[in-house]
Length: 403
Image (cartoon, rainbow, N blue to C red; front, side, top):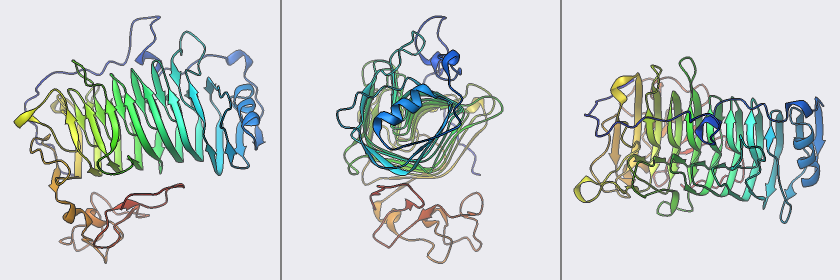
């Protein structure tokens, strides 16, 4: 893995992961909730096929294993699921037209919004949400405002998500857990503490990463807005995949669309921080869009896959095989890790047609097939033709990736 070339830190930015007792804030992200534990049903397996049945199952049996048996149109339904700690298998079905805001009721979780306000140890898989509209007065995510030790796999979220504190297309705040083979399509707005195309705020601990892999976020097109972070005075991290976080592993990802923030904005990761010795990983990633950091202007304007990782020298950082489209973002200032300014024609050229679908991650100079750091057991990338960009395979529907 290529080591980081470190530049002097421009400003020390600490990722705040706890607030004073009794306040509502980032402290809610990461500590498993005890809300509603006295009333949790232990029903082991439920099958549902209507929006009312799904809401009842998740609310009345929040530790159950629930399977969706048909597509659901949620238009006009007053959706409200404050807490879930079970398994929801969407059965590759679609929930369309769901609109929700501030679905949590307790003082601890007030202002957290998503399909679920808060999830602990939950598994959500094989589910698609289309034309989703989520608004939170504090934190919001397409699936969950906050999620601790959750497993999210094969999930699609398409729509808009908005919240003032931290906000993500799939999860607002993510403590440990994983997001795998999932995507967001639409626009994320707000998030003065972190705005991300997939996750606003993500962090692990000294022993384990929060992981995001084989996933993408995209706007309508390469010049439309993917993440519109807060641009008022101060530091407001924004990233096409993750807004801000520490002990995070992000691999095999891409983002499409413009990203704006203030103080630390990046095409993939806005503000990776070193809150412990484990550091962070960003490997095999592509950004196609334009980064705007409103604290910088003129000749200081920012570009690239990563914002200003101001304390990267304080922990173990692994970053390699990162690319961004210099035709879309012409700025020449970017964080000094192993990332490459590449013309659109370079990103679309199939560089390894005889190798295992790695595209730009399998340079033609390599005589073997490791693509990047290690061999692809199941290659996640499809590099397409000479006029197409790399996209990810094995994604959930609708999955209209921009080639």
